[in-house]
Image (tube, rainbow, N blue to C red; front, side, top):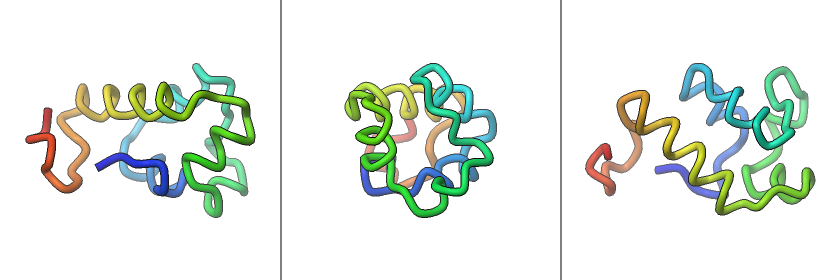
Amino acid sequence: MIHKDLLVSDVLEAFEGVGEVFKVFGMNCVGCAKAKAETLEQAATGHGVDLDKLLAAIHNFAKAQGGCGGCGGCGGR
């Protein structure tokens, strides 16, 4: 499950190519040292990005890649 408390680095590691989603929002998280310490919420706030839109975009990306591999609550949709 993709949620606001995940570390940016965990999301980047879990979904190959998801760095492009961050770039759409003006967030160059790939290779950033803060990615290992910041949650999605902290990163979004720090970049002035709407958290709900970021989470939705990451979720849609993961869904297109075959699911997030998380809790299964969404049924992999």
